[in-house]
Length: 158
Ligand code: FES
Image (cartoon, rainbow, N blue to C red; front, side, top):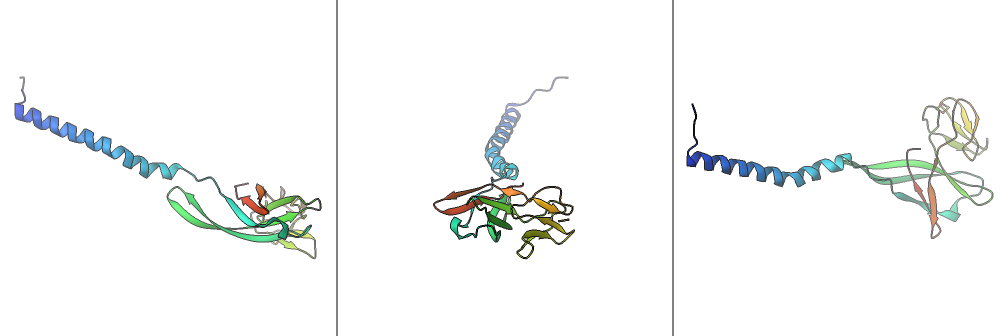
């Protein structure tokens, strides 16, 4: 048995369909604004370390950096310690202070002329190469640049 819509029912259905369509169309930009940042990871910024000529030659100097980082919805303040190494030829290296064995923090020991990792007695030379102990790789090196006499570093996952 065929059931026919009355003119009033047909108009009501049409209005509901248009309202639903408009709601969907108008919600798309909002949904994009809500969802996209959660998947976008901000590229790590260049962070100022200091005057490039303030670091001593041959002796790594620790610098603690603090910067804001956005991961999706979360903006957090990140603190990281790096070691700036000036080689005898004047070139620079910026090393992580995280041991490559089990991620303990290393420290420069002037008396031993080496980085020392207290967790399992790992040692690295001034340029981050493994001297002894269990670390499987040298200390990670961060990308850096010098502009206008200032040293900048990019703290990437290395
Ligand atoms: S964590 Fe550094 S030697 Fe094990």
